[in-house]
Length: 283
Image 1 (cartoon, rainbow, N blue to C red):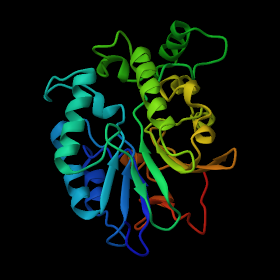
Image 2: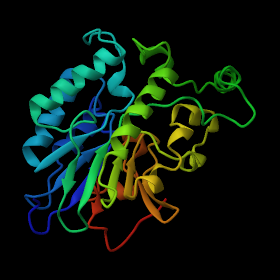
Image 3: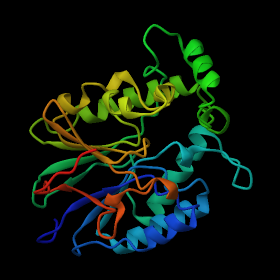
Image 4: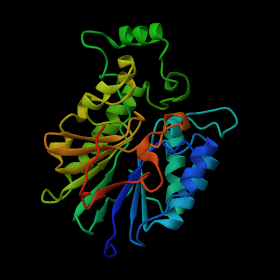
């Protein structure tokens, strides 16, 4: 159960390797003792920083629910050399040790104001299907390379034991779809994924070639099919509210220090999902 006045809050892309971001995260506080916090990925690239950050948040919020980003899956120099699925499972183990819920755990039910709703953290990755129309994957990658905007995932995010990141994405989509279909059909959901579930939000990217590392067309109808009361994502580092088919989508990135925007002023780092805020803000 949730305490009176409690809210379901969200943030993503903490990137605590930057001292400014670490300081911002250390300043995060719940508004009531019953607040839940959804963390939509990219907490940190190093396992030790990931663990210390989620431990801090877990001590402050009534419940913390995490969905992985691409940076957490990177295999970087100086960090334990875990790759692909093995690294993801280590992240899940850390979360479970801290009492943080993951995409591998039973879905929590928000019963506070605006509920009930099943809170669904997702791990889906991407399959390059957000690429320019009429191009193959290889052509889209060549286009990106020509623009000098290739995602570092190509070098640091390894898919083992899957043959490719696309194959890993397909497997995650199938598994997540099966679990979503098992939710009570009378229960709304809050869908939490690091990458946008729709291609539309990527239209704001300065370099459209980057969109191919931002999601999959396989989830284009999930906000309707699975009765989303809200959809939470990050990755783009362009925070704001948008509406698609009458469903509220929230990009909740903290982002990099040089990307700070006016909404990042004190008290506005956390985005309220439920109960729905009285005043909406948009890009």
